[in-house]
Image (cartoon, rainbow, N blue to C red; front, side, top):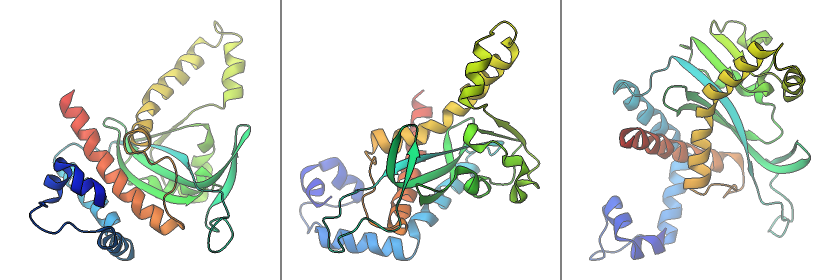
Length: 245
């Protein structure tokens, strides 16, 4: 960031800085980041921006799309402690093992804007965080097959929204063996998938646009603070995309 402030005029303009005066060095920037983490200010900023979007009529809160993504963490033990990050864990997805953390998000279906998120170790089951991703005003909830049985869980029984959860991949493969007989069921699954597609937009922005494909810091708290800032900026970027469209 220090190098970027010296070399890129648009970043200096955004930060309100000038080469005529002293540019913050990397130690100052790191101290500011630690201040944000200790006081939970990035989370407050995330809520503040979402409140602004809701008041502007952009964030509608009619329903919620829930999903989670694994963010890899360094597996090397070449550090001061000689061990991997104890707050990160490994999780098998498909035939591959992943070590790191997981970002769980709740997304506004019409816009693809993230209204809530949680950060856990990678081995946390998606269903355990489903209740933390709802804003309470939903008429409907869409989710992938990993959330099957959500409506039966004790903490989610009071949710009055309609659950639209995708069938498991194996079930869909069986349905496709007889496409004429199962035409309606297959079409229903395609419709579910088309609605759920919006939940991938925030992940694409933070990973592909912002480059957050691997955890930058040790511990969940620091990375949660980082994600709060990234999802805040991703929401603003998403609104910009909508305005351009």
